[in-house]
Image 1 (cartoon, rainbow, N blue to C red):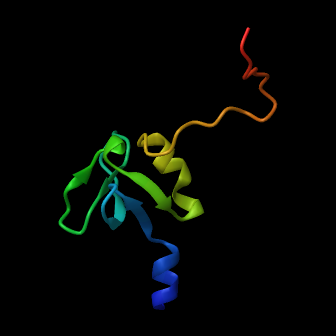
Image 2 (image 1 turned 90 degrees about the vertical axis):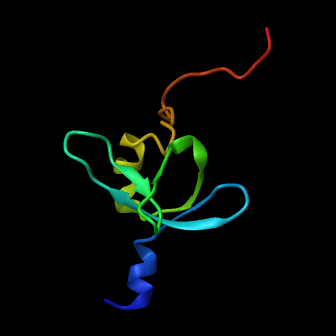
Length: 81
């Protein structure tokens, strides 16, 4: 595997002061969690995801790292009454 292939699979996030390279950890019967290079678990509210591989999107949703987006066909109103 080439370095560019590895970078395509990387998950990058910011904690407000630094950018970290993270990876998903899969636990038995639990949503996946992100961990840093020291294997410390990172909570969804501690970071903002900057870049992730498309194949990890469903797992990031299940772990609470990506918000659920409303359907494009769902009706909504952003207006003041």
